Every structure is written in structure tokens, then in C-alpha cells.
Image (tube, helix red, strand yellow):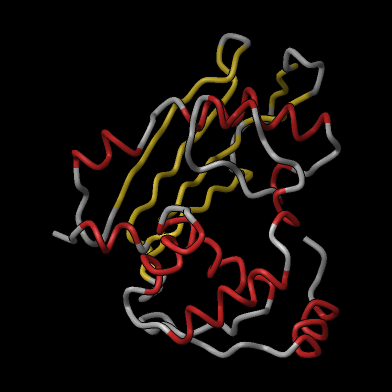
Length: 212
């Protein structure tokens, strides 16, 4: 069984996906039309090794005129920890995403299938989605975090978290975002580190990426 440090080094991400099945529409209270069925994935990735340590997948369909959770699967190659699941995982959250978060994104003109969904803080998080989340962290800030990350060892998350007054998981998510933006090079599964990319390299990479 993995220790607390292992789980603290995991980043979280959640996404909406299209799934197979008869299509139906639900009109949300804010007037937006939500097409069902859809799936909601929650993934915990161990940043130092690249291992997907935990995954939950939910399916939401239209039944009796309302979105209903019809299937939920959870898995972990390193072993599920019931006390941790009880403290950190909420079965209602995927339904909140579909009935609250998705309509709010549609109302704001945001594609919910391309938006990083909340992973913590439900049910409040479903009602308080930050539409500007993708640009909230500046490249300059992430670059400074990456420099500290590369200079440190296994305890990088604890040290950076103490400096900025955030959780270790938040620090891990910063490293993940730096990789996504091309500020920190990607690594092979099972390895950590990488290289700090120059602004020119980062900009060239973004220019060649297809829009989400």
C-alpha cells in the first residue's frame, strides 16, 4: 500500500467525454441544452513516475426526463484505499458536473469537452467554475516553479508548497500545467524531471499545436 507522500504527489484532472448510446437532450434550469449520454473521468496521476494511480469513470444518461448516474467504475493499479476514498471521493460529483457545471460553461460559450473540470471542493466547486482558469497562472510564475522543481529532489512538492502556502497537490498540478504549456519538457513514464524550455521553443510548440 502506498504511503501518504505518494498520494500527495498525485495531480488530479477531470474531463467530460462523449460516450456511445442513444442521444437525448436535457434542458438545464439556466435554459442551456445538454446532450446526453456523457462520461466524466477523474484521474489521479503520480507526477514523479507518470503512473495513473487512481481513475474513476462515470456515465450519465437521461432517465425519466432527468440526468441520472447509471454507471461508475473506480480502479487503481497500486490498490484502492477505502479510508482515502471516503475522505477524498464523492459519488455525487459527476452528476453535479453534468447538471451544474456543464450548463454554466455552455452559458459562457465554453466547450465543456475541452475545459478542465473541478476535481475538489464539491458541491461548491460545481457552482463556482473559474472560466479563466486556463490563463490564471502566468508563464513567468510557472517558469519560476519549474526552476525550483528541477533544482530539488523528491521533496520538491513539500518545499514549494511551504513557500507559496498551498497544498502539495496544488504544486504537482502546477508542474503538470507547465508540461502542458511546453514550459517544462515531457518525460517518459516512470521518470521525473525534464528540461526548462526556452520561450522561443515554447512559442514554436504552441504555434504548431492544433486548437483544443
